[in-house]
Structure formats: C-alpha cells, structure tokens
Image (cartoon, rainbow over all chains, first blue to last red; front, side, top):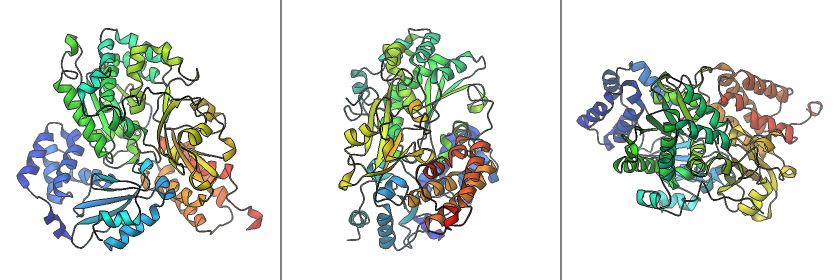
Length: 159
Length: 415
C-alpha cells in the first residue's frame, strides 16, 4: 500500500535540511535525524535511509537494524495517524479489551493494519505509562484516557 | 498518620510548568546558585550524607555514583538523566517531567557541577510527547535566561543539555542500552564491568540518574543531607513517589516517606477498592516486580522493608488487583511484555522470555501439562542468573512470585 505515503508532505529539500542539521554529530545524530524525518514522511523509505546513511556515515544495514529495533520507527507505510491502544495490565484491569474491540470494529482492521484510506494504523502497545488514565490510547501524540466504546466512536467520528 | 510529604511534587499542578518566572518565584534555581558557591566535593558529600537511594528501580546509592564519577580524571565527563520510564504501571517520572520540568534542568546542572561535567543528556521516553515538549521548552528557556550556557553566575562553570527522545524500547531504560541508543545504535545493553562511572556515554565517565532521584537533589543542596535523613525511616530516607493503578478509586501519584504502608496507600490515599470488592493481589514494582497477598498490606513501602518479605519496591509502581481478576490474564500480559521487549542480545533472556510466554499463554488457556511448574522455575532461575542486564534478570520475578504466593498450578498428581 505504497500510496499511503502520498498523504504526507514528501518534500526532499526539507528532508535534506534535517539531515544537514544532524550531520555534524555523525552516528549520534542518527536517532533524532530519523525521528524528525519520520515526523514529516510518516515512514522511512529506502531512499531516505540511503541518504541518511551516506551523509551520517552509517552503513545502510545498520540503519535498517536500528529502525527495526525500535517500535516507533517504521520501514513500511503507515496511516496518517497511528492509534496505539494500551493493552497492558493496568489498562486490562480497567477494560482495555472492550476498547480494543471497538477500535477494531469501527476501523474494520486488526492490530498492525492500516485502513484502506490511509488514515489510521492500529497498534496494540505495551504499557504506555498513563495507568492513571486506564484504559487509554494514543492517537498520534494525543493521549485519550478513561476510554469506553462510546468514547472511541466519538474519537473516530463515526457516530 | 499517613506520612505524606510535599517536596518532590510541591510545584506539580500548582504552577505553570512552562513558566520560568513562576519556577524562579517558587524558589527555583536557588539550589544551583547555592551549589556554585560550594566546592563540588561538598555537594557530593551532602548527597552521600543524605543517603539518597536511586529511584529508578535498582536502588543503588546515588552518592556512591556521584563520588565515583567525581574521582575520574578522564575528560570529558557527561551527566545523563534517565527519563525513559517504561516499567508497566510506572508513571511517576512523567508526573515530574510534565509538572515541574525546570527542576530536572536545575538538578542536572547541580549534578554536572558536582562531578565535573559540562554536557548533559536527557533521554526521554518516546511515548511521552507532552513531557518532551515541556522539557524542550524548559531547556530552551533556561538557556535564554542564562541558567544554562557559559560561565553561570560568572563562575567557571559551563553547562548545557541536549534532549534525546526514545523510540519505543523498554530496554533503553537500562543505562548502557540508553547510551547505545544515544550513540545511534540498537539499544542493547553492554556487558558490565566496566561501569558507566568509568566508561559510559561515548566511552567517557558518566553519571546517570533517574528523574525522581535527580528531583531530590535541589532540596538536599538547599537544606543539607542531615535534614534529608530526618525524613522517614533512617535507612530509607526522603520522599518517595508511588504510582498507584488498577482497581483503586483514585489512581495517581502519591508522595510520602517510606514508612508508608501498602494499606495506607491503597485505602487512605488511593481511596480504596471500588465496587465493594476486595484485594486479591498487589503487584509492586511493575512487570519486573513481585506480587503481594492481601494479608501482607501492613508492610511499609521501603526498599529494605519489602526485601524482608521477599519483594522489591522497584520503581514504586503499585498495581491493585481485586478479587474479580483472573490472575492468568495478568501473568500472560507480564510474560508477553518481556517476550516483546527482550532485546535479543543474550540468549538466556532471548530464549527464556519466549518459552516463558508460550507456556504461560497455554496455561492461561487452561491447558496444563505435567512439569510446567518445574519448567517455568528452571527457565526463570536461568534468566535471573545468566542474563546480562536487569530485563532478563527480572523477567521471571512477577511470575515466580505469583506461584509462591498463590496456588495457581494444580498439584502434579492431580493432572
């Protein structure tokens, strides 16, 4: 589903500017550089990885190794907004299973999948550190707590 | 009397966390200013005298670390703030980072002056975007107003902070894995020794402290180590943040000295159990922690008091499970968590967390085989003894404690 990338700003000069900003730090600039680019593009395409590798002097295999190690970095297309539903202990104790089911139902996809319109990717995540708000989920950078199936429907604007 | 304190959280929710003037007006940067009039050794001495115990989970003496880095002659040295809080059930660092970010900036500057460093790194969890935003703002504001930068208060001391964001890996809370991550590598722990005090970030002597540990520093500098030791029990002095979640009426972060009992925390601070239910079990210390039974609620939540009953305080996470919970569903999540988060570097952990999760998932589905208990114990003890970092060493802690505290497995002769 490569077409989902077209929903992002894919502006090569802007990406080059980010790389230039981190170039002097070499490998220590790798993680922030990839994070900043991904904030722009949604995911890290092979040509981005090659550019970063060349300029920061990091082998391409290492760049793939780093991206694949970290949950929040993506080497495959993802939706414009990533929904991370916490299903760890504190959220489970407060009803995360129901919350996850309603996300699945309204989006029509399972965990790890992206909606056909490229709007959302759904993920089940280990403890996100907002246990006082259980059950909770993050939509992009926004934290939504004390979720119920009704609130999920409101968030997705399906009602 | 519940031994509540209001030291670490005194500004949280009271002042605008984005306002440097509000921070300064409430006594902010007084400790750094005072620190710069003292000899670095005097500050290390006060941290030692305070008997400040690390709040990240390992409960190591902060003063000992500070003194060790101070002694190193290699240059440059670095200070690192570990804000990669990821232990399930733990959100006390987020409470400080979001609620009082300038305090962490000030504490890092004090620690740098004390050990002789000029550069600080703050590594904040990737899933904490608001904390990151507030920290970035606090660092930029402090720099703009001259609380960070060159020759602070016209002294020789120069200091600045660089913020790194984590990218979603529990193991990066392990200090050496965190260094690897900053250095642009997969976040896999290093073999120790050498320890960070001699060979840390970029191979240089490095002081690394947890957020809550650092948050204690300004008040120790202002009031002295002796004052700090008067707070709470002599062996475990100072305020502690407890993150309470699960089946309680008022989940949240509570601050008290470490003579606070579990009973007081659950019933008097967190409002008790909703729905007329009773406590079935309490998980203290998160996924890497231990389960306690309802008849153990009178234990004080200190590092040493919990150790006497075979438990650990860990990060200070307290998760309450009422009597409606199927413990197997919780244990399945604990083991699945470690299966997902094992970095794969050393094989006791890489293989152990996989097998452990597989067996527990099968058991949770009610499919018990003879020898399961023995196999899980064997896997657990092997991970504990042979893994290179705390993740693997603690990956069986909650499971094995659940087995010893509750009769979860049928007797072999009944199978």
